Image (cartoon, rainbow, N blue to C red; front, side, top):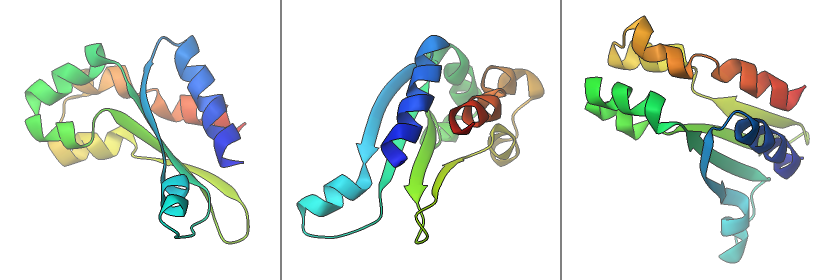
Amino acid sequence: SVPETLDRLEAILHAKNITVFSRIDHSGEAAKVGLTMPPTQLLIFGNPQGGTPIMLAAPLAAIDLPLKALAWQDTDGKVWLSFNDPHYLQSRYTLSDDLLKPINGLEVLIQQAIA
């Protein structure tokens, strides 16, 4: 399920000493105003030691940081875990490989959460 997927990711992040800043339940908030949407939750996380140098080098990167993972359920009931690949951020903000190193392992963490 969406909550179980994010629970797994959150446990992995905590084990790696990565801060979880917030969890937003989009579908839960929609239900509060009488709207229906499939289960959809966003986890916001990161490490200021890795993210701050990126934002100092490219201040607009702050719109994409901290990192986020979106767990969502499609119309067939399948749960997905989506995220912006660090290489997308590198390309978007012309970041050096050195700046990217602290967030480069994101895909591995995501894979662990869905395994």
